[in-house]
Every structure is written in C-alpha cells, then in structure tokens.
Image (cartoon, rainbow, N blue to C red; front, side, top):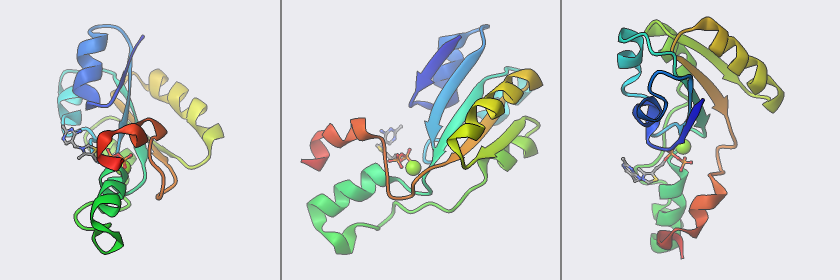
Length: 137
Ligand SMILES: Cc1ncc(C[n+]2csc(CCOP(=O)(O)OP(=O)(O)O)c2C)c(N)n1
Ligand SMILES: [Mg+2]
C-alpha cells in the first residue's frame, strides 16, 4: 500500500506502481488525471478533503491584504467529485460523517476501480500543517 498526500493521483500512482494506492487530495488539486486512471485500469483510491475553497490562499490573502481581499480568486463551488469519478467510469462516494469514511474506503477497494471519496470538510478550515508556511506569518 502506498499513500500520497498532495500532488494528486499521479503522485500516488508513481508511488504505488502496481500495488494498491491511496491518495489524499483536496478540492483544488483534484484529479484532472482521473480519466487516465480509468483508461489504464489503475484502481487508485483518492480521498478529497473538500472545503469548497482554496483556504490556504484565502487566509494568506487575508493576512497580507486584509479582509476585503480575502475571497479574491479562491472560492470553489460545492463540487461533487464523487459523481465526477462515476461519470468517468470509476467508483465515487461522498462522506459527511467521519464514521462513513472507513466503509466508503472499503467499498472503493472492493470495487476494483479507480475511486474518489469526496469528504466534505469544514469550509473555513484547512490543514493545520500549512499554517506554518511563511506566507501566513
Ligand atoms: C501545483 C501547485 N500549484 C499551485 C500551488 C499553490 N497553492 C498552494 S495551496 C493552494 C490552494 C490549495 O487549495 P486546496 O487544495 O483546496 O486546499 P485547502 O487550502 O483548501 O485546504 C495553491 C493553489 C501549489 N502548491 N502547487
Ligand atoms: Mg480546498
């Protein structure tokens, strides 16, 4: 099992080669290359942390330029990436409760298809690790 965080499915694919792969992504970096996974029958499982926003950019802009610029160019829609995966021939599910994530991952693995689990997360939150980036100090 290989896991990748950031960089999208392509990174997970390289990391995992022929082994089962899980890739965590967020809604700005979702799987432009998901169709490639379907075409090559590569059952990577992607987990999308979907906050409908590029919040790292949002809060950086707020810190540097003030609240009036906070929302310039970083808002995303409530995109159903699970349906996107289904449309392309993969397996897709959404999860709103943390308890739903484990079973969804199991079903994704069992499907044998490239999969996306669209996890709806707090629209005002972002990964704590990124708060230490220079841009936000
Ligand atoms: C390939 C690439 N392009 C642009 C950036 C600059 N960048 C850093 S964070 C970010 C937005 C991330 O948004 P999202 O993936 O939705 O994560 P969130 O901040 O919402 O948790 C961007 C565009 C990057 N790191 N990598
Ligand atoms: Mg986001």
